[in-house]
Image (cartoon, rainbow, N blue to C red):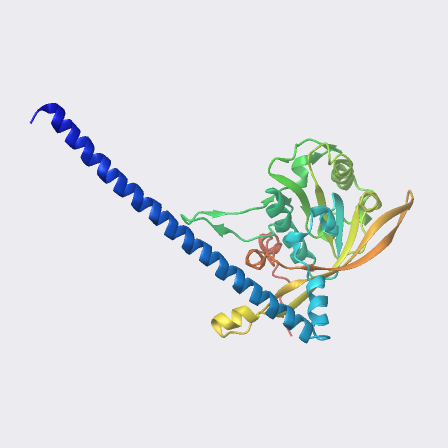
Length: 316
């Protein structure tokens, strides 16, 4: 057999099986497309039946379904709201007021996480508001970072720059323990408060979106109060954790959200202000997993570090 005949035989063999493979692929494609078309028809039929079923359920449950509509509107999902639609996230200084246990700090921590998920930026806090999370290799880490105001504000001027590339919220936890307005005649007080107020006025220039002031007092230094964008009174709402009970059989209550009274701050004159445009709204807790990292006793370590006073021994 000559080389040319051998070459022709090889190419003939290749052509023959190439046709077989192409025929197989073409038929496989036809079968696959037919199956996908049938599958789509079945899905559409199922969707149509489901739509008719749910429509029937909606019509047949009148007027009881009005309760469901009311609840759905009341607990409208946060992810469907823009930042500017949430009063707590309106750019500017915000005052969070309420008695102990009202939910001020939990509400603030939740809004810090809400902001972090929306923007990728976390908060600077005066106290440790979260417990450590653990990385895959066991390394502890925190989303939010503690800052000391005296590192930024010294002798009445701002000496430090905020890292606004990573942190866009400044949180003052429990103003009662930090800036008591009765001390506003003291130099040490004014050395921090005056540049801090100036920082609030220039926050856009510094890349800071929000200041949060948490307090058990209804008002603070007049200069701080008159710089406020919003004033909020949260009240925590807790409910039975049904999903947890389904999984474990154990009773547990978790935060459902916060009922909040929000106001705008209107300046009357140089020494007075008033709260206007009252809005009552519900802020649902949608980050349940993150709330387990909220540090409920975030000032405990501060007082634990103080020397213990034994007192006077009493004798009869």
